Image (cartoon, rainbow over all chains, first blue to last red; front, side):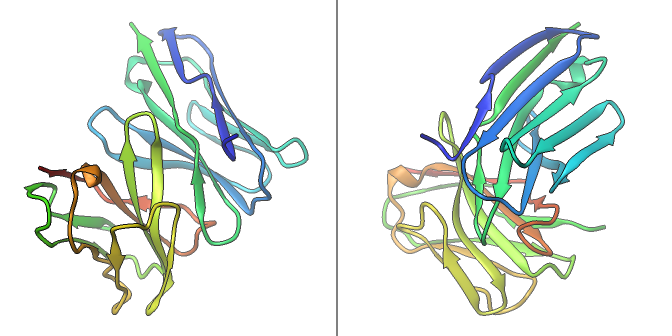
Length: 107
Length: 112
């Protein structure tokens, strides 16, 4: 079993829909990151969480430390949100990556 | 501009010919790391460095070497590349592994 599990693996939505991507982990962590990788390959950091909730524009990330679970929400999705979203956990010194969720938002 | 640079961006080489992929950051970050990304496997950590002269193995270190002689640079060395090292490589840096990670643009390596 992977230490970091993301669901779903693939997600197709219509423009305007509310999107949720889930991440569950089995190790103790200091922080959890959400990354976005666009079709061109570049990776950007969206959020770093150690507790609670963070919001940036239409993106919201939450984490429940007791349940070892995090969610990334996208409100009013847009075709430019089409990307792979990657959950990453940091415990000791290493970073452990989920395999990513490929999101496609159709106009 | 704060950034992580990698060179080269694309490289095609032959089995056994030593190569180095450079990584440099201008943000005075302590933590630097290398990853490879393969279809179906996602990103996997190769090596990381907590600070100058401090390096450690990630999940897939076989066939790779690194060095951290200066804070800003963290080169990835393939002493004898093999076809199974064909992959997309990313360098990243941050103040620590729990801080926001800044990724380089990636290096697409093909070993024939």
